[in-house]
Amino acid sequence: MSTDIEKSLGTVAKGAGVIFLGLIFGNLLGIINQSLLGRFLGVDIYGTFNLAFSLVTIASDIAVFGLLGGLSRFIPFHLKKREKDIVKSSINFSFRFVLCTSILIGIILYVLSGYLSVNIFKENNLDMILKYLLISIPLLSLATILGAIIRGFKAVKYKVVVNDIGMSLSKVIIFILFVGIGYTLFGAIAAYILALIFVIFTSMIIFRKKLFPDHSIYKNVPIAKNLLAFSWPLALTGITNLFATKTDVLFIGFYLTSKDIGIYMSALVIGSSLIFVGTAYEYIFLPVVSELYAEKKISDLKILFKSASKWMFLSILIILLYIILFPKEIITLLYGAEYSEGFLALIILSFGISMNAFTGLTGNMLVAGGYTKLNLVTTVIGAIVNLSLDILLIPILGIIGAAIATSVSYSASNIFSLLFVYKTSKIHPYNMSYLKMILVSIGVLIIIYLIKTYIASFLYWPIMIILLGSLMLFLFIGLLLLTHVLDENDKFILSIIEKKLGIKLNFIRKYI
Image 1 (cartoon, rainbow, N blue to C red):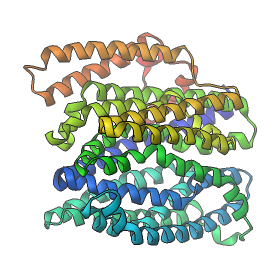
Image 2 (image 1 turned 120 degrees about the horizontal axis):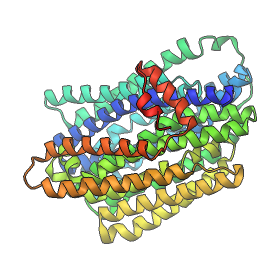
Image 3 (image 1 turned 45 degrees about the vertical axis):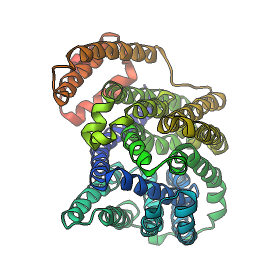
Image 4 (image 1 turned 120 degrees about the vertical axis):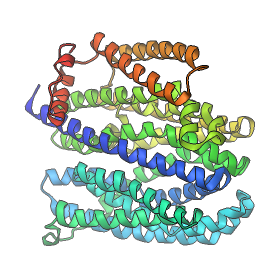
């Protein structure tokens, strides 16, 4: 293995490991926050709150205009070439642009909030909740840009501490404090806004003091045209991605009730934990790949792509097995029995969201290689599929129809992304180890399911989850080692893990 690819694999392994641990804790806090919201607000208000939150998120995504991906690629690309004038100018322009667009969109939504509440979604409480949450649109947009900057500088530890842990922990603490004085709904809104302020303030300090302390010595150069030219396909990708990921909540609000939104959101929040696992790899993968593209090291790029994709696939498989085996128990544990009817939607959503891992880091490959228009095409396909199936299935199947629509759209988008990467770069992530991992997963699933069926009637279900979950993990890892899924590239990543843990994992090495 070359020194360059060892360095790149090491960066991804260390970065993904740090982010993975941070995302586990941050995502756990996020799920705790959502479960607290679900329990204290009640299923109806929880649904209305998430409907308003979806509208705010859509507005912010539009305001950012693809600059999240643009900065994540521009910053490492030009840092590698020592063009810090361009880096500074890109950052300054992004701040000004996003601040203007987010305020404008927020004003438009404020004017339309009453009409949306009464005539579109028929939820009287939505008007008040939405107007309060509109304050967060500029804040969320600025926080997104700062996150892109931190990502561009590959500052993994700051991203974990501020975005993943800091924001989630802030929301939980603030919400609990407001609940303690008797304000639940207002506490939910205040917790989100105050947490965003914390993220912006902290991220700005990190950027000015740690990442780019000498930014003031560099001059501003014309960059708006090039940055927007690169980012506009990403902007369209982001906007169309909203139709692939957000329309389910909006259509449930239109066709069904706020209670249905609440039940669906419990499934979506838990299923989305699979997204965060992939994000751990994607977050650090894109800047590293951008550097390899800039240096035209295509052979190293292929090795990195295959290895990182395989570890992401393996990580998500473990969580997916838990969700398939214990869907109703997980929802009941986190949200309460009134949400448990969303268990089937959770299973369906989890399969669809897992397609992000099953097709590898293909979206990042297209962006890093400059194929932003092809990345847009994949998102358009997903958006069309999701929009069409939402309209067709939700009136008939309810939240199950929404789950099917979302899952099929994820699958369609990721399959086309995989095909485009193969067409442009002649690479794919697959080898025989993928088949082994799938067969092992099926075997473990059957064994644990049969045991669960036998003991479920006389064992308290929280204890059952702990016992069978531990057994499942033991069997899964054991069978993977026995089938020799790991290879030489995995040995290098394993050495990174050993250094982090401070122990030797020789019992694993002998199976590579």
